Image (cartoon, rainbow over all chains, first blue to last red; front, side, top):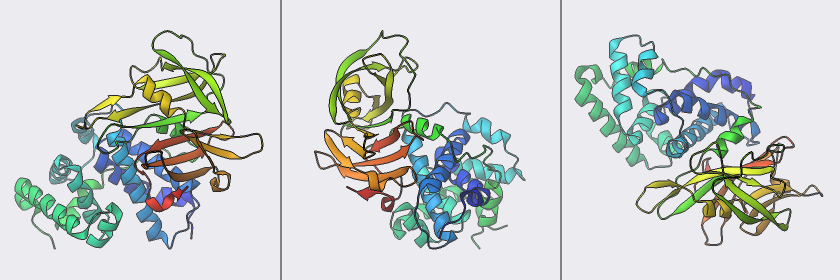
Length: 160
Length: 202
């Protein structure tokens, strides 16, 4: 099946932006990644099983492209992360603190964390998306949670 | 709130603000400005835009330049490679005998110890021998280090992704797009940037 690209843009562009930002830590680069990812879908003739399959494909492409941007020689000069964070309208001070602490984690912890908590993917789904083993996903999530728990204490204490 | 809700609340502030353009030509330009990090030993990845720079001429042929021979349309032709005057490092332009810019691109090499450096003019010259072109019969060819691959049937809706084995047996991943009649843009990398199932092996 295929879904119109315009429909996917409307539904998922913020999801792709968030996951790309998680990798790049740059809004400008994340915007580029979102653009490139939707163009890739639009020019692809790949047939998908369902919309969840499409969403997973988009996220996987966005992550790969974002990683490539990170490794690119020609990274754009962008707004420093701290300055960008100050422009975001967090609902609470705790939300801002969590956001900042997540961004301090290594990339290999941030991405599984985001896919688990924000996109509600299972361990198995994350393993497939990142082409790593389920055990590896569990280890990364455990270490990420511990790092957040160490810095946020009671603000990060409820896994239910 | 539990951790999941807390996380969602924190990251719900992120919104894409730029309008998505599905006719975004700059995607090709961006590709030409990106290079991927290959693993281990010195390796180079160059993205080049071919044939879509018609009308642009090099204003100043000073600086680093070198005569090279390129395979174009199955023929070996002489061209000049110059350092991109708008770039301080790593980006180059290829000029035909009239001084018209016919190709552009650049890249980064990763040394064995992980340090990055702009590719040299010789390394760039090697990479510019890889390109995509349509001949007078309408056949679309991918040229890679002297090897020619007919990819006509693989180009669907102006795009295709292929992987080849280079002379050393290493994979080279190509993402190719038709520049709406302005030639083909491609990126070539030793690592895939799309899921593997997106590439056709040649």
